[in-house]
Amino acid sequence: MTTYAVGTPFMRRAGGDASVWYAGHLFTFLVESDDSGGQFSLIDALIRRGMEPPPHTHQHEDELYVVLEGQMTFTVGGKTLVAGPGDTVFLPRGVQHGFQLGTAEARALIWITPAGLEAAFRALSEPAQALTLPPLPVTPLDVPRLLAIFDAHAITFAPPTESA
Image (tube, rainbow, N blue to C red; front, side):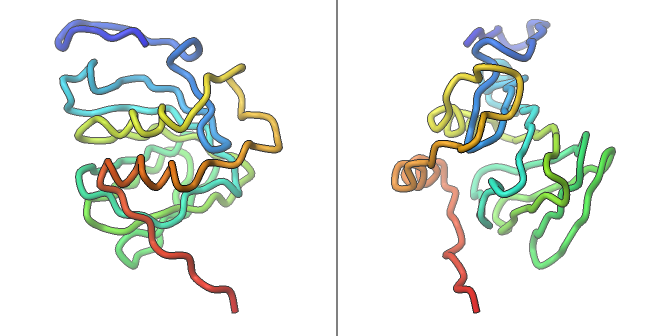
């Protein structure tokens, strides 16, 4: 990963060590903690329906999604927000949230503040072999490892709900 001194102009391209396959998605880390002095990170995420994260709560980070392509339905603090291209959704820390895709794929910019959570995504990723979604079937995540990594970042997941 190439990092830049805070306050130094830089440009980062998709591909190389900036892009990873994470949990069936393509993440490109446009700005990371070392780039912003820990202030924020920015991820360009190509997301696949059926691989969305379960409802969860961040204790340290706020997230802001700018939907570029597709449709995403967010649940946050008891509200449902349906977002499409050009829509922005703010997910405050301490409030449980999640999302589901209304399209087969969606693409969003994810702004996370403060930075640091990208380290968890990197730890659970593999280098992207192409700037596309990873091929199916997606390798299952090691759930105990995932929970331990996200727990270290003060992120808790809602317990699974039983189907009727």
